[in-house]
Image (cartoon, rainbow, N blue to C red; front, side):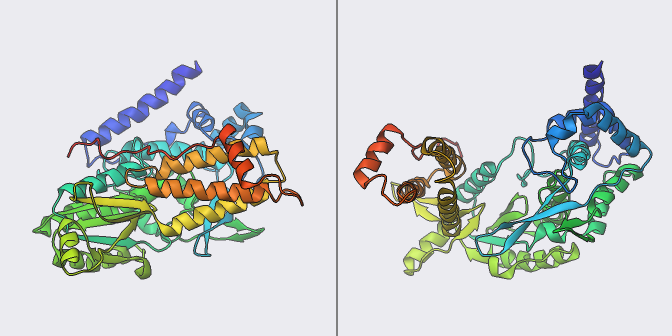
Length: 443
């Protein structure tokens, strides 16, 4: 019976997605009824175990002990419009520049409802989203965005790159503007009211409650899709429908979440776009971070001109990779990329702190396996064509850090260097590997 009901909900969402695709002007008037018990149970099963609880202290495991009763009570409150999300627990994650990134942790019950709303919003707005955006979308990744950027610069007449950074995007999303964006497709007052309550639920920080009149908390299940909807109307659609038709030369936008670059053929159009972008973002309550933003000459011709006049080609950072003008083994132009220096230093600092902390808490054979998994995680993200040297550098520096902290577990040294190399020989760490190759792609 449960499976049948679950299938009905999924079928209804699929029908909504199809209708949204067929009719781009369709506005959906009745969606809140989809938040039934079976659908919410399915959403609960997708929640990750072992995550930190929200302000109520209830974990996913504890909520599961009386799942039927909890979900039934939740649905009753949703239908009576008495459900109110709890304030989000705010914690801070240190950033490499010394600042701290705020992270919001919702309560388990709120995560369930957010997950359900997320699925509904994705079914509708995924039909509108443009191919230029890659963040927080199914079957798309940051490596797809990097691959597309490589394809554009290698095959299109790119001479300039607009590299803009939005300052504290998730903290400055305008609630009124966001609701206007949602109303382009959704006019169900109950669902919109529910989303509004999540936006206004507030923040609890060190026992003190703060109201929220802007922003979406990073870490929330619903925040990524809301961010995509916001930037779809603020940036992607505007670029496609208003900016591109006015240009005479080539231009292409590549965006992953709030990180984006725009490639241009003409300098004049690139610089005009930079000014227009500042005005456009200001209309949506967003600010361009001037110290992190620039318009640079970049591409095949820029590389040739720089060489002719004895200058260095300019570079830009996108998705933690430094992009630069490089040469192939035959001397031809190619787009080079390597781990950004800032991110590399941060990763080494984080690794040093982790090794120092764990060396006396866990036995060597156990944390050595964990170290291997950390290395694999690094390779799987940064293992892109052209970055092998930085992967090797990371591996060798991590090995030296491991040697340092293995020998600081007690007053006496555990290993000299030769003994340590012998230990690694019999307990090997994963070696650097390219996981995302660009060279087998056809233009």
